[in-house]
Image (cartoon, rainbow, N blue to C red):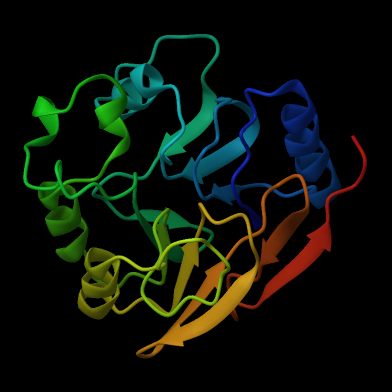
Length: 213
């Protein structure tokens, strides 16, 4: 199973790197950690929205009303579990904004649609038997270098509630690993640098250099 970090594939060079990773991996299915920004994909790809997306497309995917030829094989994870190669995959789309968290999702407009809200977190907390959780924000303790304190309490709570074996994190564009309670947490490098292979039987995650596009 192919696993991809942030893509930012609205940029032509980044889009070429994204497709180079798909070609090199030669997989049947993929997981992606947000900031995708290109939704016409070569294989079924289960992804979470990041804080940089085409939010009209994301809204259409949330409500199952996509009719654009520019969207193919893109499956948004939003409040439900998907069975992918024998694994139960769940995800929380978006990033955290304290001013938006308590609002109902229909009340978010424009760029504010990038955020997750309490209702999104509550929906994922109700899911059972989750093997792999995808988040764009990180739990506390993730050893990445930023100019601010990394970690969101609602991601902490989500991991504690769902107890996945593996949590994959986007957003930080750095590879880093930690353990939160009994969950292995891995922050992924961006697609321009690396792509990953996840063994669905062992949950072993292998990393490869993305080839020149």
